[in-house]
Length: 123
Image (cartoon, rainbow, N blue to C red; front, side):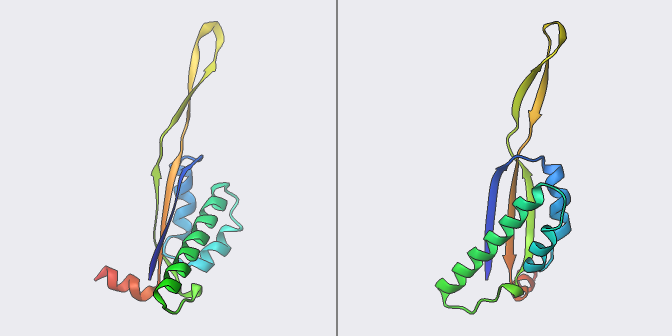
């Protein structure tokens, strides 16, 4: 059983989000949530909520299919961070000039699956 969750337009640069995402890639989903609670980066909270949402999506899919579900068996099959649109702002400077400020966003996608499904997908 495989489930996906996605969050878009997160107000953090993709580079900063990837630092957090790389810590939990391939981990057990429940352990990843516990690990992210203690990360100092602000985006760790968004990633933690996203993984929890993916687990909830897997639970709903398993109940709809009538399958057995245990969230402790789920692993993070893939987690990606893509760049979203950049908001462009200006900051006034001396002598009528202006500096451009780029407020970057990210799209984060996570897929959780049971290890047996991960191995079958790799073949």
